[in-house]
Image (cartoon, rainbow, N blue to C red; front, side):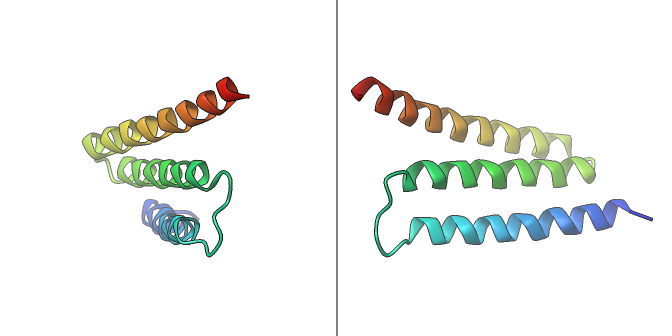
Length: 88
């Protein structure tokens, strides 16, 4: 039987792992072509996980704030991709 607290625990675990992955991406020994995009996507993923955890805790204000942060990060991803396509 699943509980809200178990869902929140798993979301927070995923959030911690995602943040660790973002840190690793940001500190690669050798730069990668799409390192900046990967970092932004993983940051957006973290924001969405934060939102899901907040929703499970009935904190709709924090959830919306996290979704807006994810949206801004994904906008930045699209800006980079669009700029790369325009150059090519």
